[in-house]
Length: 114
Length: 116
Image (cartoon, rainbow over all chains, first blue to last red; front, side, top):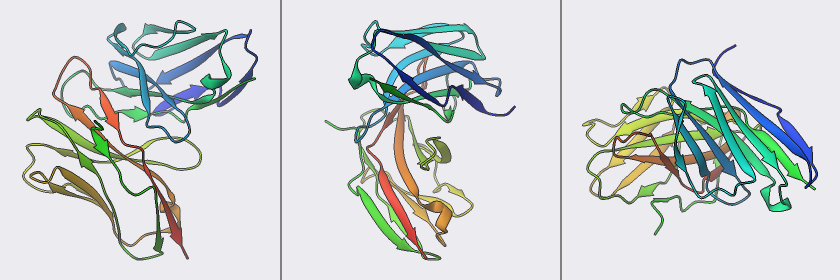
């Protein structure tokens, strides 16, 4: 396994469902990120974890709940979502704070909320 | 105010020709980094090239080069000898400062179509 992987790649869920997105990085990085990409909008940063601590939460509704059990894994727990939450959710990782800060992305999960 | 501006929603280029994708940025931080990413239809964001604010020379990575004009706050991506596989969305992004997180601010992207 190389790089950043995300599962599932596609997800369809109803508004009352609970699901989780998973991200795993094999790059030895210490920071991980969740982004939301909606049509015709710039990428929106949702959460940042550095050394397994959440360091940024960009006013994301509580129906999105992140979890970072270790520096290689990041989850996004979803519950009672709205149709406007349909988007591509991208995970990224980067080396320790400082340096260039290049983020490496996974392939994303395309989420459709019905 | 937008921090990263990409004024070209879409562009066409003939195969084997060069193309320039525009990006301007706005920051008052003397230390920053500029990135270009490629996003094919599959969705994955692929890192292409990086330019640091203190770098004296323009960055190059294979067929990609970054035309960095600091006084104009522009960081245009130049792709030489375009290939059909270059067709994708291209995003410019900026990292401000060197804080606890490497937060990136993205532009709205440019859709590049390479024609045979």
